Length: 389
Image 1 (cartoon, rainbow, N blue to C red):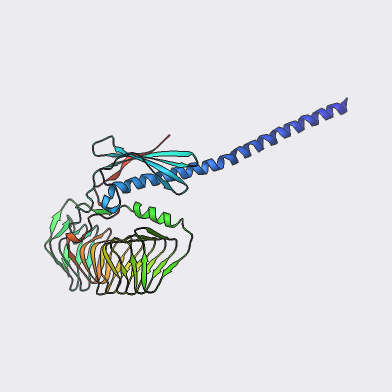
Image 2 (image 1 turned 180 degrees about the vertical axis):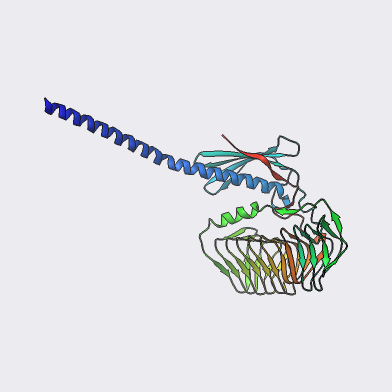
């Protein structure tokens, strides 16, 4: 009898252990099955965010530059992105002048939807009314000069032989001095609209380049490399040298640095976008409608003219007999020796050293520049983002 009881007890223990084990295995298997779904859900969320950013780019970019403009509305536009796709709706917002963007990201049948309200109205390049717009202090040293109107949010200081030939506007509480002597200036309590940049357009292209196989690329010698209006992606560095013509008016996107030397020629309406530095030297010429964008520094040297837009998220270094014609948008001024015809915008404290000479010419600024607009334009409304469940 005792033996039967012992066997029954053992059987009960085995059943209990088996139940716990099978329960554990069930949970593990169920969770492992959930992992792909969770990954897909996370990807779908970030793809939806990319859809929001793409819609914003469409709105703030003119049709001439590939965008749609602020008047664009859509009940549903779909585009592939990464491992899935997004569908964006752009509608009139809940308040006057606002815009509602709804984006749904989809990966393997799993969707996430978010929305963003924008407010305000853009003025694109309408605020480029100055030879130099400095969003902080402005210092000129060396032998350079500015011809045209100048705005400085902070103090403007000239030393040596530098000069400003044009109306100067400063904020209340700031000063304008040359070699320690006060100079005449218009004092304002209202800052003119700050030309700003939304890098969404550039970030999306760089993200696409990062998906390509890693490796550097070189284009050397004489001849023509034809972009044919398309996009060349390089997940690494790109070096161009010799008497090379970049033809076709397309786009070059490089995750690393771009360097071009020699006596080449870059066709009109060509964009070069880099995740690090961008250097053009020698007698290379960038023709009308060109766009140079660097996440770090841009260096321009030699005798070639650059016509279009030069946008550096850090500094611009310039030298040589060539000119830069159009917009220069930099973090903190310029150094070297260069002639600029158009307008220069500096987002932080700016120093111009050497023989930088700037002449204001509003007609040389491109009619539309991807991502560049004035503060007071379309902006994400505070509290206007939410995920739709």
